[in-house]
Every structure is written in structure tokens, then in C-alpha cells.
Image 1: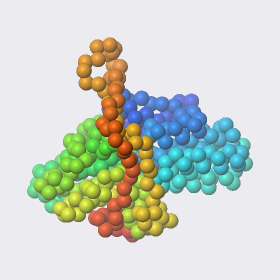
Image 2: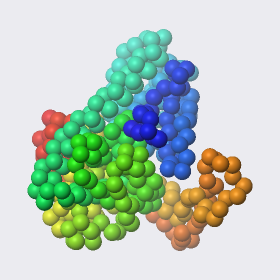
Image 3: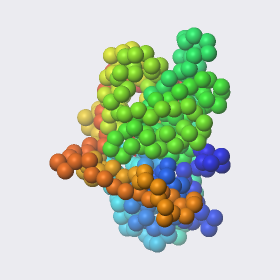
Image 4: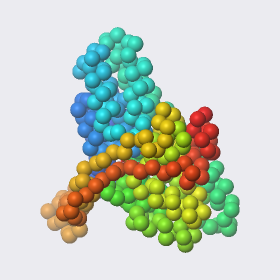
Length: 363
Ligand code: MRU
């Protein structure tokens, strides 16, 4: 991933080799602040309060969180308790459990004295694997976009719509839904991305737009309700989204609002792609209705936070802008964070194995 021209990964270790280094994504794009996670409490807070978010990155953060916990106590009981706490931080993305299961498979058989080094090593391997999976998704997705571009008049711009943030900020690097876009842009395909703002936390307007700008990809932020009109007008060539969990029957759970985009895409004949690594497929979950949907705080829905617009005379140059929170409603609110898109609305899944139907998920 590129930030101010330099290459980074979304998660890693600080120079001391043990504290975990992540971006506080709550501050983006207004401030780029890397933070230290030093304890299990830090890791749990980082996931639950969404300093880090996005299914694959949540999983890798949990893996490192387990390593941090074991530094304090590497006994069987502590390992069990730390896994349970990390697992409970967010309910929907299956990658969290996937990563913890892999960590436990490596750590449970070991004597406590060997567990800390093994935990860091395994977390590092899972992070490397995630980066490789996303790079492969990008390669397969590039071919999808090339094929689409070949059906359009020469020189025309391919318009892609995406929802939420499924880019490098949601993974270790590259992203899932955005990886094909980065690969296509780097390969010289003319692209433009419609970025759903993604209420209530605005991951599209804040994070996806930041990523695309950092990579030099032309894009436009739209309100969540604009996509249907753009599709009716022929201004969207494809929709690509990420996912937090895909059930055995192919139903897709992703950020709330995804389903409505899939319905509009189906109605207007726009192809609708879901990009994911195998770590997001949950064969034990029979269908979308069985996936737990996270209900987040109503404050996310009833307020908005951002930089104040009036000149902030008190600030030193280079200091981040002053933020303010305003109220949108005083009425009762509900905030389901994800929804389910039935498999029948999905044109194809883009995975590290290739592009296709349920067979590419099942491997
Ligand atoms: O609540 P968030 O920001 O963690 O939700 C993220 C999404 O819904 C992403 O689309 C999904 O995790 C896929 S990330 C590659």
C-alpha cells in the first residue's frame, strides 16, 4: 500500500520486534497515525473500536493479539481465555475465527515456554499469506476487468462501483475488491471508481477514497443511494465488493447496503463480483441467514464526526485539523452493520484460485 508515496503494510511489528504496529483508521484520512499495540487489551480494543477493521485485517490483528497475550502468560488457561476474548470482539467476519483457529493449532501442542516465539512466527506467516492471497485475487480480477474493457469501445473508461472499504486498509496489503482495481490501473487500463460513502461509518468516503487517491486511481464519492441511478444510466460497468463471510451456499455477508447494490445491479444487468480469500469462506455456515450480524452502537448512526470547516487559527502548520461531532437525529436508531446478498445475485466470486461460481469457493 502507498501512503505519501512510501510502501507500507497495514500491520507489522515496531522496530523493537514485539509491539504491534497498526494505523489508527478512525483518524483517516485527516491524520496518518501509526499506533503501538502492547497488550491483549490493546488488541481487543483495536478490533472492537475499529482502529483496525476489514475481515482479513481483523484476523491478523487477533493473531498478533494472541502473541501479545502470551507474553504476559503462556499457560493453557491464559491461551484459552485470550482466544475467547479476541474471538468475541466482532461477531461477523469469519477471518477472526479462522486466524485464531490456525494460531491455536500451532500453539496448543507446545510447552508454554515455546509459545511466544511460535505465536509471533505464526502470526507473521498468516500476514504474509494474506498478502499473497490478495495479490492473487488482484491478478484474477485484472483478467475480469480486461475482458470487460475489451467489450467496450477502444479508449473508453471502465466504471467500477464499490461499497465500504475492501482495500489494503482492510487486509495486510492490496485488499480484496480493490486489488483488481490497483492491478488494472497499474497495467494501464482506464478506470474510474464510484465510491459509496458507506454510512454510518463512511468507510468509503474516508478510507477507500484515501486509498484510491494515494494510488492515483480516478474516483468519485457518491451517496449510498446514488448507485441505482448510475446503473440505470449505464454509468457502471461492474460492481466489485469484498465480504466478511460467505456461507456454504454462496450467500455473501458484507457491509450493510451491499444487498441493495446487488439488487440494482441484477435489475440493470450490471455484473456484480465478490472478491475474497479462502479464509472468508465458512463451509460450516449453511446460508446467509445463519451468519451473525453485528449490531453496533447507535451513536455511529445518530452522529457525524469530522474536521471543522471554519479556519482553525489556533493550529500549528502540519497539525491535524480539529474535529467536531454533530448530532444527526435525536430519535431512536438501529445500526445493523452488515447485510446478506443471496448467491443468486452474484455474477462470480473472485478468489486466489480464480473466478467463478461456488466451485472456486469450495476448491
Ligand atoms: O465494519 P468493517 O469496516 O470492518 O467492514 C468491512 C467490510 O465490510 C469489508 O467489505 C469486508 O470486511 C471485506 S474486507 C477485504
